[in-house]
Length: 123
Image 1 (spheres, helix red, strand yellow):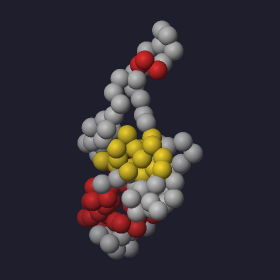
Image 2: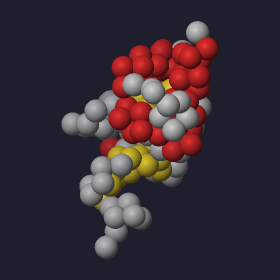
Image 3: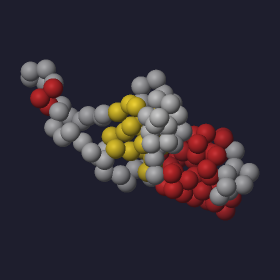
């Protein structure tokens, strides 16, 4: 039980420290420094559990594997670097996008992803 708690904490802490959505492999690489011996199966099992209990949420980008971030974030969007493929949070929002919907349609939510090069990958 203690081992599982230590590993679970390491996974949550790795995501919190990254301050951006992470792929399971990125979670593993970061969390291993906090919990040596951590394996990918344990990461997946804990990501599922932490998502089910509301600690984490998934970030789904078209054609990409799900990434994970803390669920306590307010409404925000994402930026994906086309060079390194990392995803970052964008806390600006264009606001009400209902004017873009066809006449008579009701917008209930929106998700916006920007694409380009991150600071590390910019020429």
